[in-house]
Image 1 (tube, one colour):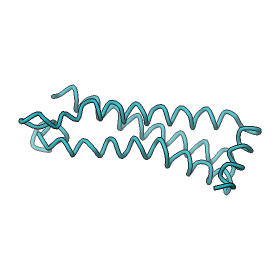
Image 2 (cartoon, one colour):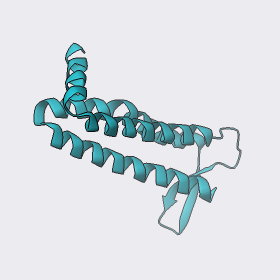
Image 3 (tube, rainbow, N blue to C red):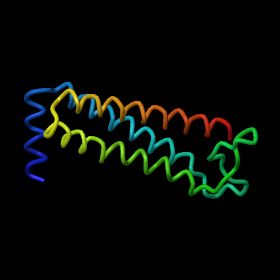
Image 4 (cartoon, rainbow, N blue to C red):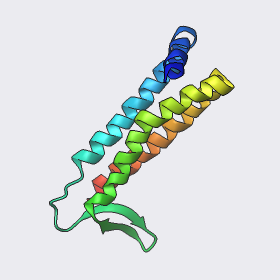
Length: 121
């Protein structure tokens, strides 16, 4: 854990842009978590639209299936920035930046999917 914080201090001193992108990724993950938790609706009897069916539209599911969005948001908040720090240690700043950009793209796809599912309900 000490090496993780030492690496974060090194990144802050040498490449603050990487810290800003990691912070942006964390904010995107928190937006996903908040949007998913607000729209869980466990008391709704008819279910929540949570998945896309090949037979022509969205299908209703159980409220706990929306927890996958919460877990993905938490992974984007906690795990991806930590992995980016480790990638920075091993491969350097450009590869860590590429990893963060890919993570942000994944987060945007997850957020757009969540908002579309919520909008269909």
